[in-house]
Image: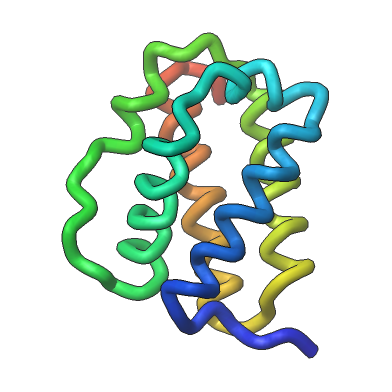
Length: 119
């Protein structure tokens, strides 16, 4: 059995492994290929430390950051499946479960604001 997400180093591993998988994904890679990784990865690590370890200092609006993008419900699903799979491969426990729950809720919130949940 794997350990739970407990430290900033655990978050770093999760984010690094996840985004390396994103860049290997046929559906997701096109949306990330031109990203400034030197800026994005530290921001994502800070975000997940805020969410999972209660570290202060993250103040960006995640939803607002995504509203301008041309995303689909299918891309959100692909992202979420890959995120859940990565968490499950690396960690298990309450914080690992929280990571998956928060990712799901954040994704649903963004999709709702983009009107992607309507039938």
